[in-house]
Image (tube, rainbow, N blue to C red; front, side, top):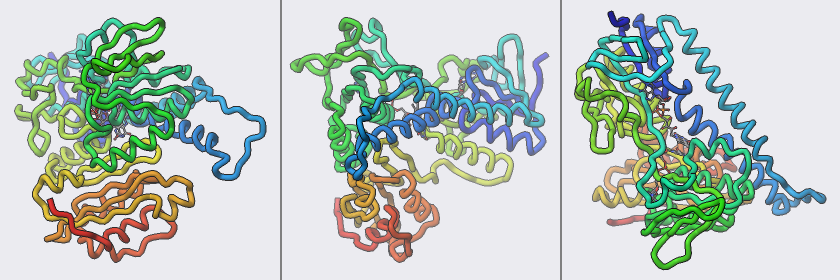
Length: 459
Ligand SMILES: Cc1cc2nc3c(=O)[nH]c(=O)nc-3n(C[C@H](O)[C@H](O)[C@H](O)COP(=O)(O)OP(=O)(O)OC[C@H]3O[C@@H](n4cnc5c(N)ncnc54)[C@H](O)[C@@H]3O)c2cc1C
Ligand SMILES: NC(=O)c1ccc[n+]([C@@H]2O[C@H](COP(=O)([O-])OP(=O)(O)OC[C@H]3O[C@@H](n4cnc5c(N)ncnc54)[C@H](O)[C@@H]3O)[C@@H](O)[C@H]2O)c1
């Protein structure tokens, strides 16, 4: 006889713990299944360790730039102790994971089961020699690094985002395939730690989801720090080169050789080993579970949350998925993923904070738009900090005065952009937003200012 629960949650990603909390608080019994480390990608191999590393890289950069601020380091040559950086990262990760583990193991009516879960039917799940059944099953199984079909790759050692985090020494020359979130964050981290770094991107631009000027500004400050960027890398092949690797970028240029290779070309959902066919759950061609706007799969009683549903690939989108499912199920709400305002950050330094539409998206949507823009060179706080790379932008619908989106690439851009996000969420018209008194000197204070200095932009 299978063990019976009111709900089964597979995976302890960024939606699962909070969902287990709400379900058990409502009186349900919950089996929470995890095959790896509790907390999933964000805690163990994603946001937490990378942002801890970004902080070490920022410290190294501040020290390297000490003279710019009138500080002299007498006789000291800076040395990055990668093992110590790594120990600090691991301690932060461990503390986060242990806290989560304590919460989940102490949670009343919640049973944490360790092992790989597979469906044996639409209501039946196997974990090792245990069979579990529940009327409601929630999938929060996340994703893993995508290994592309690049000629020669299988024959050389290469790093993924997860294994890069285990480095105890700074690579001599880190070659990175992929110029998006993972590639660019690691590129700057390791450059600041003293590695030579080359980023190889098949597209025309780095972080190509962004508007051209944003993408160009990011490339410019990365190149200024000494990172080599090879875009339009159409013909990629990889081969061993002594102890390192050689990457062919295109037919004519010499190969890029390095000591280490990081492959950062996206992630794929952990849905291929879940036995979804036994439950009748449908996925798209990329393996993402097909869901409706309430995150219900095609099978009654099965939901998919987080990266595996293809409706977001961030910690905050996974957590918002929890809110949507829990509010709808337990509070009788009608929340929909379709109403979510896109928001994210790229944690380069300076970081990019982004909400809503880009200029290109607003144009493509056929909107008549007005735009407010200011380079960081004209933002007092950025000048005072000596961090003037980047720009900020607010995009407004010329007909309705609604704020459609914004970008803040500059010091604290990941935080400042929330001012636009909050205004958009509250439906604040741009003219009202422009009238907000903001605190001086901050980067955010200029957001209402540029919303009051809009100029027309027609598609
Ligand atoms: C290097 C890196 C940096 C990142 N930085 C950021 C950032 O700064 N900000 C941000 O918002 N996002 C960031 N992300 C993305 C973020 O980590 C994910 O979007 C987030 O973790 C949400 O994942 P999830 O909840 O879908 O599942 P995950 O966190 O991936 O967890 C899924 C869990 O399910 C388990 N599992 C899978 N299959 C099974 C099975 N069959 N049985 C049992 N257990 C199973 C896995 O072991 C895993 O623990 C980063 C990602 C990476 C890789
Ligand atoms: N700051 C953050 O929130 C953050 C940080 C890291 C990761 N993440 C999440 O992790 C996910 C994966 O990030 P990612 O950067 O690996 O993937 P991505 O999908 O964002 O970008 C992949 C990049 O690799 C390029 N590429 C693909 N194939 C290539 C090839 N053969 N040669 C050269 N370039 C190639 C693409 O053009 C693209 O620029 C993201 O979707 C993001 O949600 C988020």
